[in-house]
Amino acid sequence: MSPVAARLPLAALALFGLAAVSLGAALLCFAGLGALLHPALSDPMAGLAFLVSAIALAGTGVFPLVFARLARRDAGPQPPPGA
Image 1: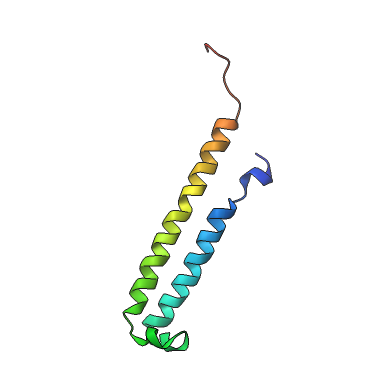
Image 2: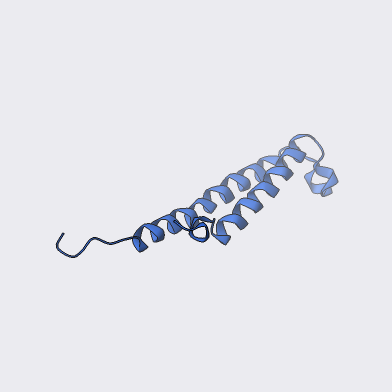
């Protein structure tokens, strides 16, 4: 398998990056520092929304990985017909 085929799809990287940003914001909100981002985030429970979003973004980022793996498997060597 070549290194180009083994790299992560761009969609997965983008979704994992957004999940990391959302997780960082959740940690800030849970620490009581959400007001540094925006006054509406001064409530510590605002971190729960960011945490749920981070989990959803990471879960969604798994789909392009699975599709890329399936595509690599389908593009691999095929057995001859009737074998």
